[in-house]
Image 1 (cartoon, rainbow, N blue to C red):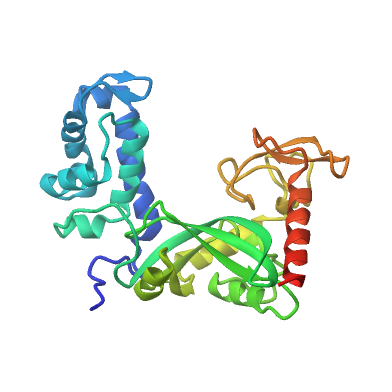
Image 2 (image 1 turned 90 degrees about the vertical axis):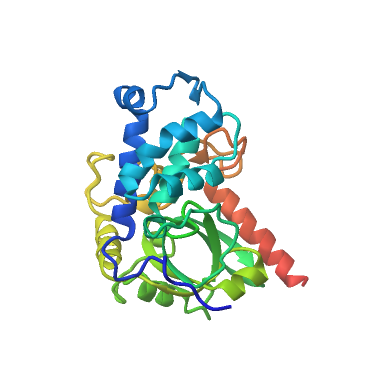
Length: 311
């Protein structure tokens, strides 16, 4: 198959994530402002669902998206039809479509509709952000799984996981420092990689074989290098969310990425009593777990190690 990079985001392109987020937020702000909703769409809300047929909602959303993206209304209309396949369209559906289409502006402006992402079909550089890190045993080795979220390109809003070993023979941390453009002398941990951004070169052959997105190359350059180094420098400095903390450890904080840009995990944690260690620990709210995050992690590693001995 011949590689088709015509509509890919390029690493050197200033457009990248900042422009994607700006276009996405512009569309979302129009959707959410009552006056603009009445002006552009003249629709009524009922518990977050628009009170009209999906076709009418898409027709009303089309000029809003078209103006923000700078693409022809016909192309935008076809893309919305493909992305929103529901009888009742919610505000969240429009939000999701706004992000996907903002991440594929070059393709839309070239007159090509956006289709729902299923798997990688051509080689493409895409920006991604690390959302989470979970320690575990995999392939007979101790390590952890990173969750990446694509923030531009064909797979915008989709996620991908990747395992990295962290045992003594592993060079994974040195590799991650290099591909995330961090100083080699920095004392960052595997969890410090959470929240950082990088470019991934998606591999169509490996992706088709695995049935999910896979990459052949990872590299943070330009703006991402500055962002990642700035984030690493912020961690360990006084935090406004935690007063009177001259040297705050972000890896030991309960705030997640949704609440704090320097967080090292995705969700906000609550503090409760752990039945395993009998201490106060972090929990995911409404998870139903009786033991804290740290005890759960130690348990998973212990079970994984025992399984590895018998394999």
